[in-house]
Amino acid sequence: MKDLTDALWARAKDALRTAGHDLPVSPDAAVSRAYYAAFYAVSAMFSLRGRTFRKHSAVEAAVHRDLVKAGLWPEELGEGYSALVALRHTGDYGDLDRVSSGEAHRAVALATEILRAVAKSDPDAFGGLGEA
Image 1 (cartoon, rainbow, N blue to C red):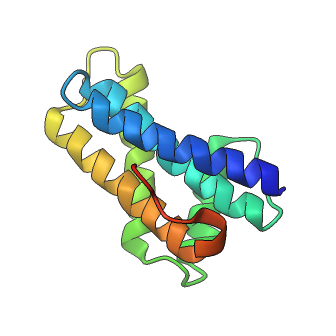
Image 2 (image 1 turned 30 degrees about the vertical axis):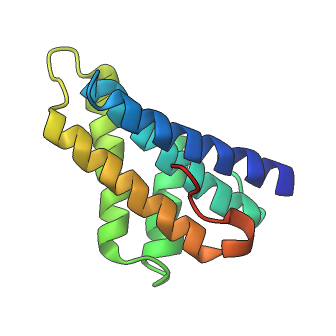
């Protein structure tokens, strides 16, 4: 599982960097990358514990059940993860709806918070955010 954890963490940091680069170009793309940064980071954290999920909705449910309700994460962080899910849906599938610049900046900030929380959960495994 260590290889999977490392690969997911690397993807998380890369997606966060890409989200920041996409902000001035495409809020929709920035939101999508911010969501994936959080998704990969949380998936890495669960992978370290020997757990993997087949669906994005299962990861979101695990965030609320196993992190927020268990008292490992504040409720606001779980709400932030769910906000990223909703924003990504708008950004990727919104048809006429588009993500605003402000929403995209908020999404990148939320993703950054989530990656920091994951890094803090096991500093030896996740070693911080580096350049992200």
